[in-house]
Length: 172
Image (tube, rainbow, N blue to C red):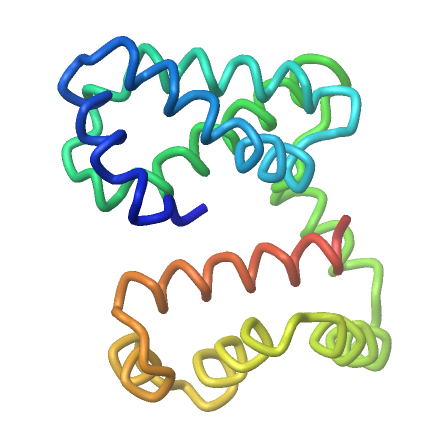
């Protein structure tokens, strides 16, 4: 979620403690929080994750040091809440490393190659491009950022999201 520029004064006012600005910010962010939760949670946990993320946002916004990092911080809040709810309710963790290892051990090389090709083909173009540059062409993050016209932080973020999506496709 990149907060539109017109909301930056609202974010700043909420960060400084203005209760009316915080209330408006919660309203503005709720649809994005819901979208994040729908991607990261079990469907039965979406509403709970949204409510918990809004609560964390209202309580901890003042602890965000760099407002430019707000959207990344908020995404992590939602992701953490989804993981917590999933572990608690169904002993489910979408980023379970042991499950990934078991999945890898159960497939031979040919099956893994086919799964990898299918995974890469399923990715949106921007995500495919960044994975190919980093993991196949072995570009550094700085080189990727320059090649794609992104900031280093944006390149890291896109790579992280691309890998998460690929992992979800493969293991999920």
